[in-house]
Image 1: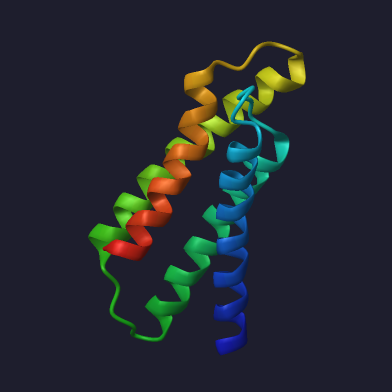
Image 2: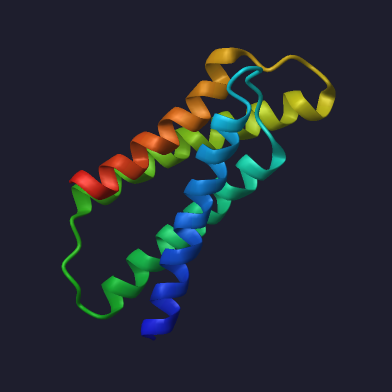
Length: 115
């Protein structure tokens, strides 16, 4: 089970890296990619999986922290979905929407580290 937890944590970090890395890469001409949306989905699934793992094994969970991280991730997920749909339709993605995806994912990582 430790391997499974480590795998979920690794994939969770990969999701953050894809979102933030793509955001930094496209900083000059902000956009939202399909990869950012699927990375947000990956973060949601692995994050919920890790909470479930700790819940099953009686680990101490900081529910306030998890709640804040979940709300931030849902904002990232919705913004990434909207941006991805605009990109697929060939429409211009607003700068604020593109920065919301990357910036909120970075804030989510900061909450994980510093809280």
